[in-house]
Amino acid sequence: MAGAPVPEFLPEAVVYLGASVVLVPLFVRAKLGAVLGYLAAGILIGPSVLGLVSEPERVLQYAEFGIVLLLFVIGLELQPSRLWAMRRDIFGLGLAQVVLCGLALTVVIFAMTSLSWQAALVVGLPLGLSSTALVMQLLAERGLAGTSFGERSFSILLFQDLAIVPMLTIVGALSRVPDPGAPPGWQVAAMTVAALGGLVLAGRYVLPVVFRIIGSLGAREAFVAAALLSVLGSAYLMASLGLSMALGAFVAGVMLAESPYRHALEADIEPFRGLLLGLFFIAIGMTLDLAVVQGQWLLVLGLVAALMSVKTGMIMVLARVFGKDWLSAFKMGLLLSQGGEFGFVLFAEAQRGLLLAPAAVQLFGAVVTVSMALTPLLFLAASRLQPRTVAGPVQDGPEMALHGDGMEGRAIVVGMGRVGQVVGQMLRARGVEVVGIDLDPQLIEVSQSFGNKVYFGDGRRLDILRAAGANEAGLLVFAVDGAWDPVTTLAPIQAAWPDLPILARAYDRTHWLALRRSGVETAVRETFESGVALGREALATLGTAETMIDQIEDVYRRRDSERLDLQLCSGDNQSGSDRLIRERISFESGALGEIPLVDDEEDDAAAVRA
Image 1: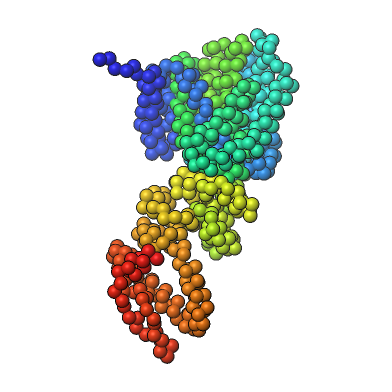
Image 2: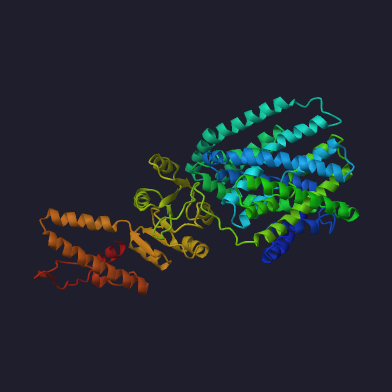
């Protein structure tokens, strides 16, 4: 019997994953970075070497969604107020870089090739753009994304995304076969502003309501689908207007940056982002035509050297003017010296407009790919010129600074109900900034109305904790209601952050013992102190002297502590039953007499549950 036909995509998927699994760990082990590993995997399986995949352009079409998801996640990390604070770098440094590098490269291309000035312009301007995906991945791998160096680099990249619209307009204006149905430039600009305004309104007023409704239903799959819909919907809106999909996703992310669902969104999007971004770099590697490089290797190397040296020098000078020291400015120049992924889009538009021949498109595509492959190596070499910059604290969302007395300034409280809110207030009184996590949208809204910082998500998930800043936290408090299972929950957390102190709210005595046996440093029974306080009030109401009340409390606490120790050490919850108080305590000369024991199985069973 004939078997079912093999889906067309399956062999290619196996090839992509196999190449990634083999090469990426090798490059990471060699401290060359994952990006270079993905690029090498693409070159190896592409048409120029093994030929296991023959149509890299088709793969690149889908892999570009990795950039879209990357920009959405970056947007989630940037509150609008912080983005506004970066406006000088975005519209000052970014504008200067795009214009000066683009014009300088136009002159270089015109001098080094036989292209007309129009063709040189539509090549030089795109080469002035850098690779957002590559740069942000390198920054993340080296822990620089949250530093001033990383923010300034991102400001340039963000303006480059905005510059795609006017560059497309320039290509269309110079085209030798203009599209009569193409809208004029002013209309494109108006449509861009309107689309961005629509995204801002939807992100601020519509999406939070949608996520609140879905979150209250507890349907995680629907929540993930809504997250992807918000990303792809914003990308589709921009693409339908001929604009950058990544820009639309970034705006949607910024609008959700102050939402309590921010960390849950980031955690759910992250797996898709990582896979698609890796696929994007593989696709870029596959587009490298080694035949072109081999046939014109002197020209290719000359153009790559000119591209990277011009951009490095220009960006270094601009960064120095905007306040960076010379070494940091030089490293920023190297980091942004490559050609970018949008170069492929603009080169294709120039080819359709008869401004570039197919051979020229292949040549400059090879230049972009080679420059992207060289950037991780050059940046790694430059980073060794001084000790690696440690990512400084970013006062955005859960990122916090250290406070005095050597105390960590970040505490994550999982469960912001009655107990969690009390813990949070006491920590804030010490000057510790608290990040709360809860699954109840209504409770989150109420808590936020009192000025608390609470995010939606299951705080027992590693990805949620990581998104909330557990890597830098000094304390993790579980104030969740109910007798949740500490065995399955705590082991992954302790493995991921072995030095992170964990405190927990225990539902009852049995839950307390389970928490302590699972490695929780401190567990507090939620009803113990209130029971003691109520017992004191009951004794006082019966006319008991204050000194006797204190003595009764002391002996009860001592006996209960001894019993807990016996139960914890023996593993038997029935241990220490002889420490229970069963009848009147005799007081003589202020000393506590012996407590008679009564053998009562029902009392023992009830005491175990207490």
